Length: 130
Image (cartoon, rainbow, N blue to C red; front, side, top):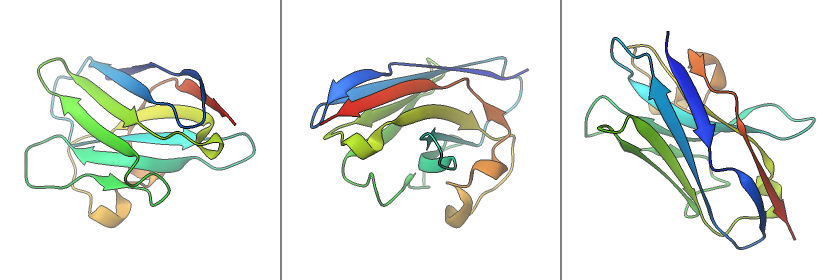
């Protein structure tokens, strides 16, 4: 069974940075896509960033609200997904989740859609104060 475990959340001031990590275990097949999602109190879960982990040639996708500030990356050898978050804003406050898909293809329009992801971590809280 695939298991995902997020870490790196915390409380920061606006303008500061955080790096989230997601460790992956129990993978016996191939994971095609991995992404970061977030959910603020009273709001729906939304996609933040997604990356194709099956090879090169597919550019990551970012939500408009984080473009230029957040960077998704992976370390295949360490089986770890990262989210570098710079210039954090109070509106970035949320529970952040790591997610992954079984082997299947997603087009760019669906890479940030939570319902297409099959595996989820428990989340890590990010709080940004002004």
